[in-house]
Image (cartoon, rainbow, N blue to C red):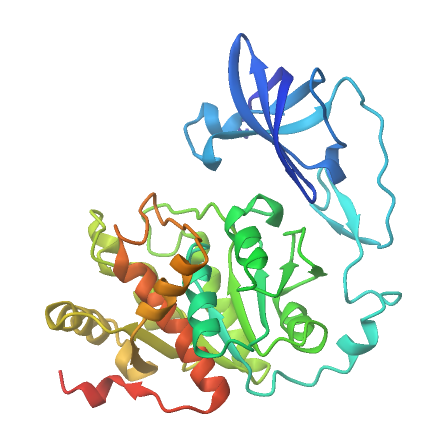
Length: 371
């Protein structure tokens, strides 16, 4: 049987509100704790309301940023949110709700979706972790400020896009122009049924010329070769190739990791690119000191990535500078940019390479380094 903890609480403050998200404080058995509420699903809450909370993740010490989730407003149990649309998300659960998916017949952009024939060599940067999207977007905007960037959030991790403070900040600063949520994920500027139609929407509806695909916050890992949610990077790469785009794989690189499986080039990247990918992608590696480049070379060679993919080298530093300029603070596994520079340099390099591909600019290939 599944493990679930349900508890009652009382709203004592509303800390933050933005579209379809309330961050609140609740009192549960004399203790004040934080929670998220999604008004379109459970209705709005206010100070003094009694609420039913799902406290499972916190009680099991699983994270979610330290937040519970409101299941119902017991003080105002009846509410309705009637909008157009018939495509259900969170299907066949007590919380299923309808969205106006862009593919629907009555949607104003349905004709644009129907006209999609292919991505026409648009670069699509597929990421493993949500935190990588910041560097990718900044790198692309640095190299090509006029780029129109769409972010597609998949449904392998968090499902509600509104909980991502990172996406909100990137949109606020103009580093991401549009968001699309596909599958069971929800809350983007456009809703999509799957990754293939999401890519079509990015091209024909959002008019994006660079696309970033990544799971939302809350990566799942099991210390096994295949049991991690970021594995959907390979789905995005294969879909991009099938739809005639240019697949760019953002590698997971870190020299700050204490976990051996993620040190250097993570086993996530080695598994996805070395074993699972059936297409040849561009794999940007950030420019690093020689000793680190040689270690990365060992990983690339040992996992067969150099033979399968087009590995290129790019300086990711301009992306980090742009994030600082916009005061966007991002962490991966609790580490900020200065604590895990190589991770964010790799993401920045991927964004710069995507912009160079879009503009037809020259790339530096791995074999040109003579390492």
